[in-house]
Length: 286
Image (cartoon, rainbow, N blue to C red):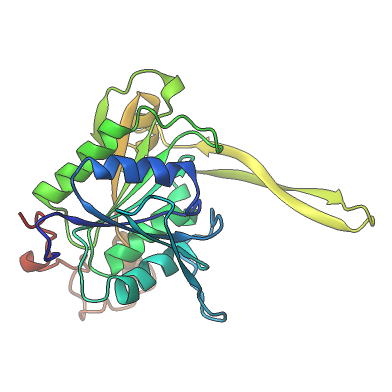
């Protein structure tokens, strides 16, 4: 934890340092009496997933966009880059009590979590052993209405700081748009089985050269009532715990049977790794 009596919160996003969503997030976190450090992309990085910069130098420019009380930087890289350079350079030996990414302009429910730069910043923090939350509002555009999100962002962050979080976990939090009606509460959920039904529209530029534009519609194939999509449809804030271990443990067992191959432990049942109790993200320092 940080040495300060106030919690230290690292903030990032994928919509850039100048996006309205991150400005709302910083204002909400101020209400927690937290020390806030922001490292966010200099330009929009939506859909970048967990990309990192390895073939070009990273630029880091200090900014006063949030006022003198908030240490803020614009990074030329991706959301994952932002968290990496924040941990290893900006914060140096200081460990954040919480890493918060967002507030994203648009939903990151279901399969969108794989493409999301917002969630990649949070997942990068989890990889680094830091408790992390990604917040998204289910309304796209620079003029999205963030006026109702404060109590829900504050409640989730307060719970994470006071009660702790499971180790190696990033929370994917999606908030219904204001126009959808009053929010009913917060609901824990699993990721829905849904995907984009995609197609490429072929077009011609002014020189009659073809180019392609990705488009499509979102299709939810999951009828379960315990999913993030179901929670959002019912007017709840959805909270999905995410991990970066993508191993399909049921698939591992199935392949051992179908292909007659030994499991890693000479035939023992394959189970997800169990973190030590000491690795749990405990509450923030008083």
